[in-house]
Image (tube, rainbow, N blue to C red; front, side, top):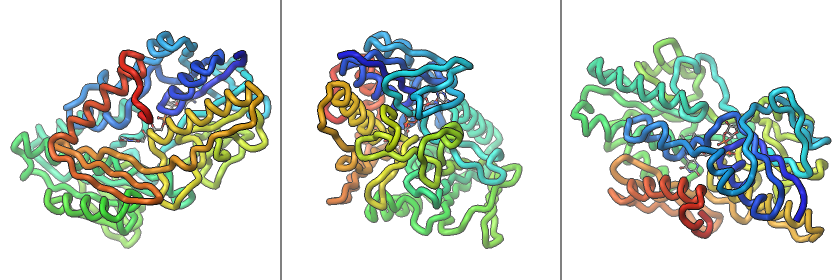
Length: 389
Ligand SMILES: Cc1cc2nc3c(=O)[nH]c(=O)nc-3n(C[C@H](O)[C@H](O)[C@H](O)COP(=O)(O)OP(=O)(O)OC[C@H]3O[C@@H](n4cnc5c(N)ncnc54)[C@H](O)[C@@H]3O)c2cc1C
């Protein structure tokens, strides 16, 4: 089959799209501003020092060579959807099919620079690890962790990893014999944070936070952060903190907001069920860049990003071959998360039909570690892909 595809963004969505488009026989170029894919799900262990920076990176040039597509490191500066064109480091690139996969951008509430994040640059996760070590060396203190929402698109909230990091940090402090020297607090503006994962998950998470002695401040709108880390709330109250971890909800990538592509109110690119951008033939958007449709509890996740990319690749193939069939990601919208606690995990799975939360003490932690190893090896073609993973 002939045809060219240009995939922008080398995260979960972009890499999966490049692999599947290449398998479909297209000539594929993947452009990303980092030389590696940052494996966010396993980056939680960089915070505690259990994982190293390099363990969490997948070299994109290496993967590209193994799959036979071209990887180009570069920053996409603008997108012109009508011409299926992007400008990369001053040079325009075009293709028969343009796949947008550059993720979203974390929102910036006032004073967010006084906090440590998990969802932006990989370097910020390393800075958090170093700050945590400094605090332990200083003999203790107050640690607050929380996440924010985006009322314009609630699917762009990112709370699961913050719970995971809180559980892992509490577990690490206990193992190092210094837990009683720290006050831990969790904050979120929603009255019931984590609700998207289902009622069982929320109840279990709150029970665990309580058992770990973590103070909970829920249901208060966050107004900002002060130098040093204190969190301020709309009702005038404060949460004192010496080290604050905050993961804002996402909004649309500024470059897409400045483009000609249609977007929802939060700035995510509008797509149909087949990941095509309506009115822009040959333009597709996948993963966190796209405006997700589906049930009210839907959430942007890495596994769903990969599903969307496989759907888009299949539909691009059908388009190139002149076939009318189209796949849709909508039947696959689910929340699937192996929520790690450092000494075990819980498997959270939510679909329209059911809500599950299966505790997996001890073994769950090693399952998540195993997933990380499988992710890298399977993308490098060192082990076969398992169906749906
Ligand atoms: C700490 C953490 C833990 C998580 N854990 C899980 C989990 O356990 N399970 C799960 O399913 N999901 C998890 N998620 C969510 C998941 O990581 C995201 O949904 C997923 O990364 C989305 O993939 P994406 O490719 O759409 O976007 P991204 O991963 O954000 O990738 C976008 C890529 O585009 C690149 N890029 C951005 N701008 C430009 C530009 N101008 N030019 C060129 N390249 C650009 C970026 O460098 C990046 O490589 C987690 C998220 C975080 C933050």
